[in-house]
Length: 292
Image (tube, rainbow, N blue to C red; front, side, top):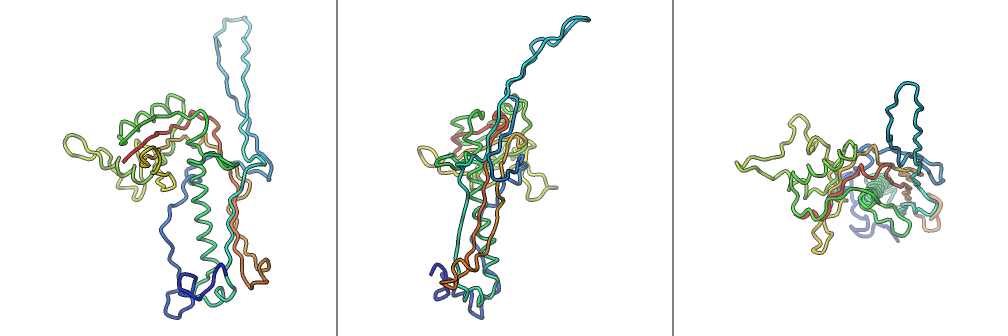
């Protein structure tokens, strides 16, 4: 059976009288991308096309009195999200009805929350660094046209200034850093020649991280195991108003009480379907090759 209570690992610990009425999970990253304020567009199950102006330049808008106004023709384009070929995120788990009845906690509810958290983390990784292979989400760090700072090595505050300069040079307004915890720690430990820390946390905002005035979203879903030596990560600076998220189906939990009735089991299904794209790719700067 996919889940039972004959052993501790299979759920037996949940049915003993001495156990506390909760289920402790492994520590997981918190989902961050949707919290950082992207533009979310909802679809009704069909591909979503977002029109945009790709080019509009005013060559000579100055005119004297009684002279003809020059015409300017913009170039239009569109961003396509949620193509019909895009895969969904789907997870299914089964538990026995005996376990559901005998457990000292509401095991169906706890497992539902746990599965949603894991699907949300998978979505975060896809949004950030997804490679788009086999009809999956292409992450913002891998989108065509993003600005890049390559071969960073050990990150410094100067690297952050370089990224911020690139973003501002593209008329973007950066609103989020995304990075692995290792890289935030490395940046915060840097000191000046007198031994004083360069980066100072704001004591009025406990638990909130800022770098150069931009909020930091720390997540282990930004891998630190890339590159030739398997120790490289990436840091992403983004103007989240230029990041588009297409939502076909939000994270949804369905309890299946009849599907596995022949086994006297309860099914828990979690599904979601999202996509990501960039309205203006220059609003994202990626620092590549970041090492400890």
